[in-house]
Length: 598
Image 1 (tube, rainbow, N blue to C red):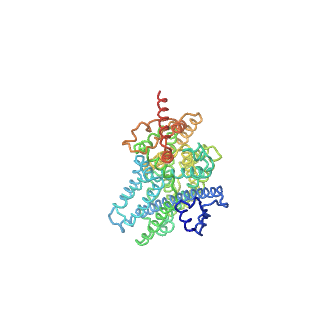
Image 2: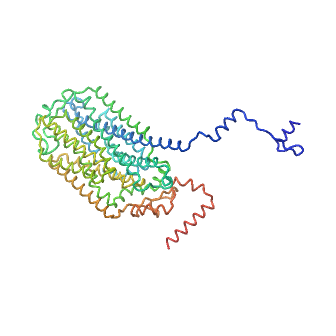
């Protein structure tokens, strides 16, 4: 009978209408499952949430430090290899013994032309590349191009050096634009992870205006404090390898008659064509280049492994979905903003002053008076000064931004006025302290300029949809300044000093005029970022909503919030709504559109 009751209970029936009470028997596995799925009295949701976001903040800081170290190593290897290569190729004995009549000097000229001329067209493709590959991957690919340039030096020929230098010139602006965009986005994400409890952070697509300013200042200052180490790293090949092969200043400067402001033309007229007292062996050169290649690959791995993504996957989709035609046009349309137009002389000046410090001053004043063997120490003094004083960018947290942003150009202007009246005596080692002092002070001004401009752009353009366009304009104008410096290499030193001084004073006046217009609350005109379109509609950038419209950034934010446009991140929530509710929403939106048209 017990078996009958058991079988009946299984089939849902009972004999004589009596339903037996079957007590479930739990084995050991079921008890563990019940314990796992049941309420855990020891679980603290708030503590777990704090731990999660603390880990997120740590990963964000780690990504910024990794990107800074990767950029410093990449540029340190690039500048160090270029310096060593130019010194070796300048020596007449080295060219004749190693390469015969191959024409190394002509190859070097074309290589420098490729590096300096190619960035002129970078404004046309940089935003497209950044949106296509993503910010982090563009940074990684650009560092790979620099590693490619190092690898081509194993076989120095025209068809290896010149194409690789041209590709590097093409990637300079994408590399720097992606770095500026990456650091700014990481600062904004850090703000989100710090203020994760605020409801506005999860509901709004844009952060409150000025909310992440403090973190932008901190992260940009941290980046440049680490990046400026690249000038010190670039001198390692000369410190540890090339210095033992160089002649002393008595030999290299024996025919030099004038230095500094008295130089009539060129960079170093009368400099000896033989600077190497003995030639380095091919095996030693291969070892040196292999070490540089290892550092370049290490920087790539730093960026690839330790750097997190700057955007969420849905945000990446939104940034690409505005149409490739709009992405191509928007950098040009941002020139409508008077803030960018007023800052353009400042952008050009920042390119002038760095190149002048590394070429005009370091060679025309430093090498000309105390010899080529002291060039690494001058560059190192400049780089360490810029590294240490980049922390002055933190003063923007408490001081008005006009103070740091005008202090750099004014300091350089004072130094340039002094350089106008200073012509060092060749082969006079007693002038070394003054040369190092000028290098250190110039590094202070460079640190204020670089840090201040990057912070200012991050504060002005907090919208994540336009940061890559703005940083592209900034670094494209810097690259244009580098091209101008390349063109003026044959000018007299007085002309070079005058151009740099004029650019410094114009940049200060233009910046102060911009601040005056901002204080008068003159509305700035910026292009509207089209809403994402996730359906293929042919020429999406010719649709009704394009970037030809312009308005103030505040009005744009309000209008976009009122329209209720859906991004890729909101699309999933929209699809989960019932069909009837979506129809009512669509009818309501059509009605509202008809009322607006009337």
